[in-house]
Image (tube, rainbow, N blue to C red; front, side, top):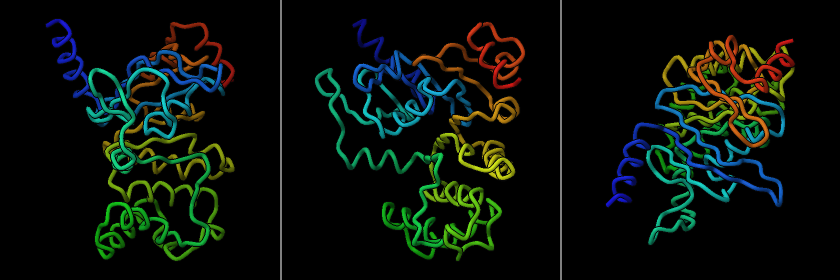
Length: 268
């Protein structure tokens, strides 16, 4: 009876979050990259994950949509187990079809833009909604033009990636992710591959999405964005969440020496 009550309580708690992980573990060989990570993101919340290189930030994002298979714990997105299903009290890997369906609901913007070089900006955006979601082409093309306007690139619909700056390519990548109508957006160092003068145009699009209520998990070294846009900041180091809280707390009243040293280095 107690187990049933605990399960019901856990499911009720999960339902209040867009993202929830329980004691998440990920290893690469003998290297533990995530060590018992408990992490939540509420609907409409912007959570920014900061920390030194190698702390597990990118791996956390990749586990959230099963690009990396976890070695322990559980991940829920919108109340549903990610990558696995429960059978007789044990987790077994889910079907490829179910995993693909889950991924189609989670937008992922990578460090590198990963655009199809042989397709125009418009063609890059419409590919997945037509091929994966089987939506009508006319409807998808109309939405793609709207998204290009949204990211400030309405005049670049017919441009190929090599004709676009890095910032423009990344904005196309964001529009491509949004074309799937995701319930969650993941950003992995979306500005780190850009020249400094191009960073602002991508951050502006991300700020707009945050203002519109998109649920977002953002891994970034852009501390200004974390301070100004995040609802919640998570500091990771050595495979664990060391400290988390509102930006005001993390940046102005941090309680942890490791957090303080990190911020001292990156903020100067």
